Amino acid sequence: MSQEAAVVFANEAFYLAFATRDLKSMEEIWSRDAPITCVHPGWRPLIGRDEVMESWATILGNPAAPAVEFRNARAFLYGDVACVLGYEVIQEDVLAASNTFVKEGVSWRLVHHHASPVVNRPEFPDTSPPRGPLM
Image (cartoon, rainbow, N blue to C red; front, side, top):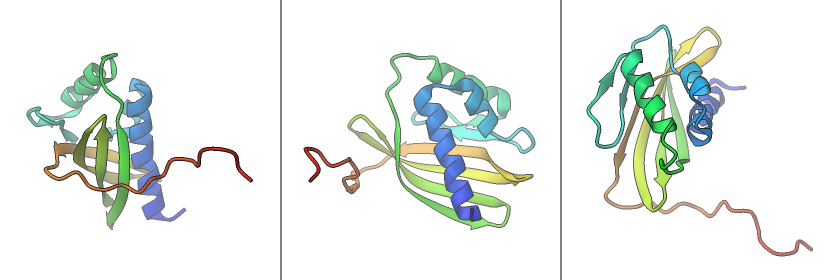
């Protein structure tokens, strides 16, 4: 697997933990060695593992929290640092998101997440499966 694919895979694992509200998996995705930070939409910047993990415990523990889908992932590698840019689709809202990863051993670990609203909703290609009988 290429490093770019590995970073995209790590990003997908982050959103899978988000979607399944799996706090244990979320904790594993974030770095334990490097300083971590996070900016949720409308929140103040969170600094340090305790603050960031507490925020995820609150979000993932809220049954009313809406589902999030990540679209249009693009990875940018800078040696042992990588950034994945894309969009979070939350019901009718779209947020621009950036996720920064660092290489720790053979794994890519999240060190920064930032999501914020966009003014103009981007167009996404239809990736839904075909409907109706297949012939």
